[in-house]
Image (cartoon, rainbow, N blue to C red; front, side, top):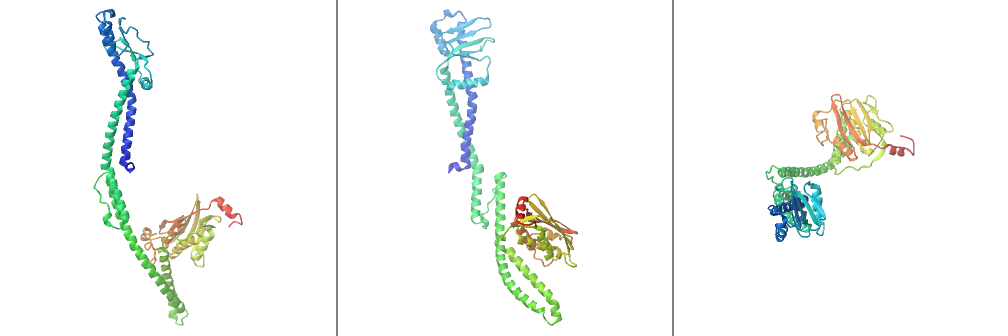
Length: 469
């Protein structure tokens, strides 16, 4: 459980990254340590040869020479001076050098490679080290050294660096861990706990998180979460009220339709009445009852939960549009005129009955608004068919445009329910399309329907068994 927390993971990552940084630093550090080791031996050897400054090597006691060489930890020391003289301290039988290391022309990259070779090499080869004299410009010192003591010194240095790296890593990681706990983890746990508590009962106002007042990202997250919780709580309350209201409306609609059905039967009988006045008002009464029945039907359709059943089929668009236009009152004597700009072979994939309802609603709205001409055009773009329905009516009032697809608010005429376009959009979106208002001015209104188009290959296959539609 501990490693699942963000702070614990960051603790481990901090330790790993610090250790990795120390490893990257360790390699050049070891190379520098090796260089310093050689420089110290050269300086110590140069100092030891000062015992020869007052005379020749033969005058020194051999035991003193051995003692000086042991102090330097070298087999021999040779100083080559500018005047051509040489000062030399060596053992009776100095070994032959296995490798030569010249520090007069240092190379950092080569020094790193040689350091790694020294670390991981076994044995005790003799090294001939050359370097500039520390106290005499132009002169250089030569010493013969064993490599094993150097290797041991380098490993001891590496252990010290490792110990220091572990201490630094743990200390740094602990500070990061505590900082995260205070700045991030504890506030995040508080936010998570509030979300969990709110999920159990979102309608309880007391479960809303109280913002801490911080001005950083955590503070903004708390404020946004508090606003979100309040918005969700209000939306759920409104939804519950609307659900209760919808249930009541559904029950009332059911009873009201029964009453209206009885009234419709009675009014049908009035049309055969002998009284002229009764026969005159009967059609208006029948029309009013029919509108009331239609309103009840649309309200029930809208209150039904879930999208209506969707049965997509491939069909030609033009015949359907012509059928709906005729049913809407276009094309008759002294009736509004409808023009169609639709390719005869244009196919769409949709629910034909639902699309019929949508087109019927839009065209009847145009007729009721006073339009005298309707233009229906269709164009295919990629895999979508755009169907534009334009009329020359007076246009929609501003209030209707602002609430066009809102139930009970988007009616453009007195007595309208505002459900027609809301239901139309729901039907279109259920089959992968949409309906939008393109323009509405004093010279007319244009709606656009988008529908999935049928690909050319599919259209060809669908027309293969019979003649083209």
